[in-house]
Every structure is written in structure tokens, then in C-alpha cells.
Length: 210
Image (cartoon, rainbow, N blue to C red; front, side):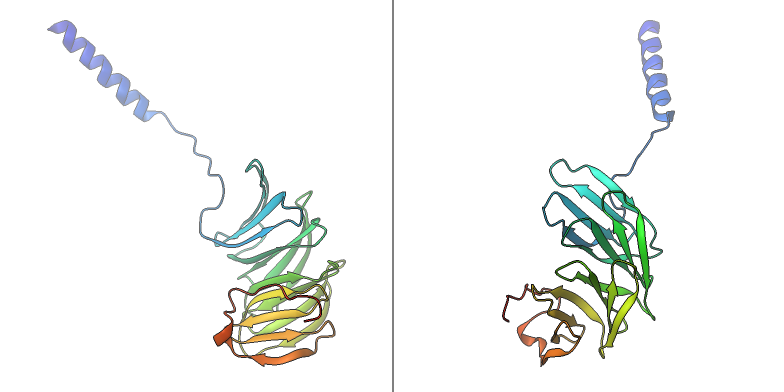
């Protein structure tokens, strides 16, 4: 009986000691919900933006984490790749959009809004311009080479989504469900399309000649 008691005591001590050993926990990925996802043009990489304020660049084939982008102070609402895949953009509730080098992970330019967060992003077909849609209704065009503001327009409601067509027509969907299309010169091609026929959360690419 004593031998059995010794064995049980040893087992209890072993379990207790194992429970006291510290564990190294390394979180992989985001710690809050993901608000935006974009593929690189060649589909090799995926970019995710999260409510936790970080964006992560992933290798699609392996699932390997390549870069973590941490400059934003608040949640990231939108992400986008330039057509060449070399530059990527993130837009945040902190009122900034940031251009990054996808190969090195380096910050290239920080673009600051007048007020409110950045809710939508889109690159021009040649990658020379970035369009941002703001919580305050601002629709801005930026030069990607130097981060300078090129044009600023204003809508009456928050812009929730953007997409640029092959001829750089810019389609934006608003918080009131309206769809508007702008030409490359910043002028409206279509005055307004009520949102009953198109949700601003899902906008298809427009075709040449539209």
C-alpha cells in the first residue's frame, strides 16, 4: 500500500509541476475581426486589414506571414494593391491612408484626411493615383509617387466602397445606397443611381466603354 501511495504522490507532483511551467504563446494573424482583404495582381499574395489596427501580407500558396504593418492607430477599414503589385495601401479609422512597399514592408507615404476615417481605397489602372473614400464624404485623388493630394471632391454622405475601371472611371457607393460614377477628370459620368438596384458594399468592375 505504501508503494502505491508513493506512486500516486509522485504522479500528483509531476502533474502539478507541469502545470506550473510557463507557456510561450505566439499569436499568428490578427487579434480582431478582418475588415478588408485584397489579392495581389498575380494572386501570389493576400493582404488583410483588421480592426486590431494591423495589416498583414501573406503568401497564398504556403500561408506564410510575410510582413505586418503596424503604423495605424485605429482599425483598418480597407486595403488595396497597385496593379504592379509593388505598392499596397491601407485605410484606417484614424483618418489616414498609408502607401507601403510590398517587397520590403517599408512605409512610403502617409496620406491624411480632413476629418473622419478612410473607408474605401482604389488604385488607378496605371497605379499612379490612389483614390480614397472618407467617412466625411470626401473623395480624394493622391499621387502615389510622392503622396501629394491631386484632387478633392465631396459627397453628402460617407463613401463606403470604391472601384476603378479600365479607363479609370471611378465608381463609389455611399452610405445612403447611392452609386455614382466619375470620369478620370473628376466629373460625374452618371449623376446618380439610387441604391435599390446596387448595394454599396458590393460593386462589380465596370467594362471598357461603359
